Image 1 (cartoon, rainbow, N blue to C red):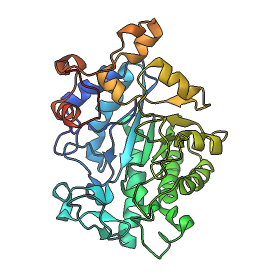
Image 2: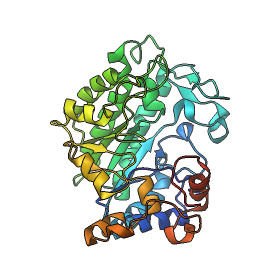
Image 3: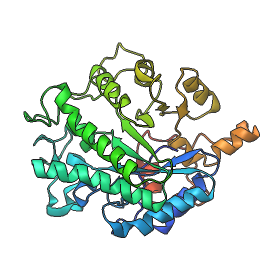
Length: 349
């Protein structure tokens, strides 16, 4: 199960009963569940209703999530996160988003972030390590570093949001410094605290539409560097697995396939995006990519894997009925997002 924002946690960052029920409904059949992103530090909170892993007081809440997922036989991966310039001012301390540089996102009304000081950068790196320790204590089977979808780690890698000229920015190699520092801190934390196998994955977006922005050439250099770390997988965040370049309308090759060809022999890749049917999943596997994540499909069809295993393919739901919230066990805030976000899900009229 791919990580999906639920907007359904409690105000203090703990998990709600509605969110627990949501995970319970979707953790039967899948091999592992990657949670919605959890902020590692209050300054990095990115959404109202987001769960946190910023304090030891969150450990009991995190334990509820891990044990619920384990209860249906799946492994539990906690996605750890900092929103950076995408954090809404109203949900963070001092109402001041932070980023690599004081460059706002290219969207209407985007706030101008504060360029992070050396101390703030180091505090954030440490926070990812502390979040990993809490995930270990809470009983998770791994963490996924959220380096995708325009959030802070991607902001340091992007030439659009990172205009620094110190060790944390500049050329391509220096823009990798922050992502690699977080990766190494997380891996070091696992080596210090984990007493059983504990996975560390990294999620990334292969391109940006902004100019300057991340290109596939940049990303192939980053994944090459990441593949030399002791990560367990790379998760390539795309809205549509089969889509070509965001930057070049004449380039139709799926970005995840390009990454698989570059470093798939060194590290497992997860493919995701518009995978609804078993045939869709098989087409991903046929490229040599060994792992498939389902996101939106598991919102509409929590029993997807079980139905495939039982051969009940004709009963797999690939559209959303507006009358199905209770049956699908969707929290109210997530349900509102599902039915109002244009084009995100195919909705039955």
